[in-house]
Amino acid sequence: MKYIIAGAGPAGVVAAETLRNASAEADIMLIGDEPEPPYGRMALPYFMVGDIDEAGTHLRKAQDHYEGLNIQVVRDRVAGVSAEKREVTLAGGGVESFDGLLIATGASPVKPPVDGLELPGVHHCWTLEDARNIAARAGDGASVVLIGAGFIACIILESLLRRGVTLTVIERESRMVSHMMDDTAADMLKRWCEAKGVIIKTATQVSRIEDAGGGGLTVHLDNGGPVAAALVVVATGARSNTGFLDGGGVKIEDGIVVDEFLKSTVDGIYAAGDCAQGPDWSGGWAVHGIQPTAADHGRVAAINMAGGNAPFKGSLSMNVLDTAGLISTSFGRWQGVDGGEFAQSVVEKDFRYIRLAFEADRLIGALTLGRTQHVGVLRGLIQTPVHLGEWKEKLIADPTLIMEAYLAKAGGARV
Image (cartoon, rainbow, N blue to C red; front, side, top):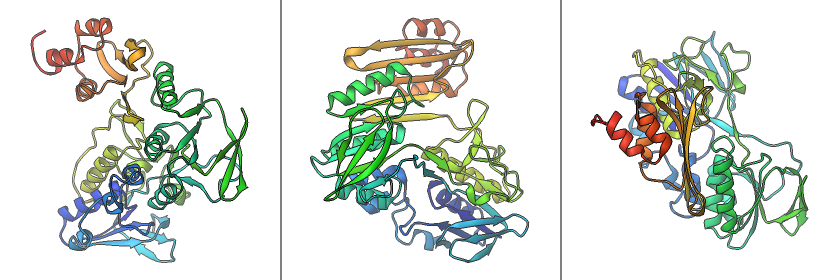
């Protein structure tokens, strides 16, 4: 058997290792298009601030890890797939046949329609090379413009502040982290960042970026005057890497559509990670761009590629974010559902907020700000579809009683 894995991120690496555990004889080819050993993008902010070196970003630390497992690592990119011929075409010109193919090509940063993104000093924070370039310009006191205030952008914001830059954030939406927070949480987060010296401009778009000479840049806005910058970082979202599959018979929506075994609509072709539209804990199907889901996808897909029978139970939409020292989380269907109820508690002066979403007497989602205790309990109550009974009303009266509710219902204690 010959397995090809397109993509050398967390999903691809875990899949390659799982396939090797399943078969000592199979040929396994792991294809990645970056010059570095397989690494984790989530480690890049830690590299930028010096918490880890480049080797610390690598998914596996031993230099001979893949060689020791007889996994062939190829520096190239899959440019096309022929399901009929069971072949992949590489960007470098090669053609490789396969018995099983896993597409784990991840996602790429969205480029907003702004003139000047190609100028020196304008970078996405997506690759290790991007992180090197950002670190080179983001010196103490440097003027930096961050385009975007979503989840990824706020992770970058934290790293930039730790480097001592003067930071301006431009966000086209009316609030920060709009896919993770409601208006109350987003307003608190904005005020928190502003208190740290960050200029936040929401409901504002960058119209163009110009070379200001001497290595500087001028960022023009549709709302307000221009901003001078030594560095512009673009973090306006990500999109699944699936374009090379066009016309190949693989069904694609937000990502590659897979079944509960992570198999695509074409036999022998599976998908995992940020390019896969997989089972969601809530019963739907979604792309979850988080590393734990990618690793779980890779393991389950590989088991099934090797002839196993391992349905994926669904991943929980969850985000944990540290923005300049303020921890925020969102789990499950925090926006709520039609006919559902909410409970919330706000302590403005302490930047503390919790909001619970219910469907009937079950907890289906949660949003917190400034509350780090019992995060695991929240996740447990949401993922375990326990009937809260009278504890629902107790939580509506005081949503901070989540530990007591967990012990009483999910933990098996008497109410």
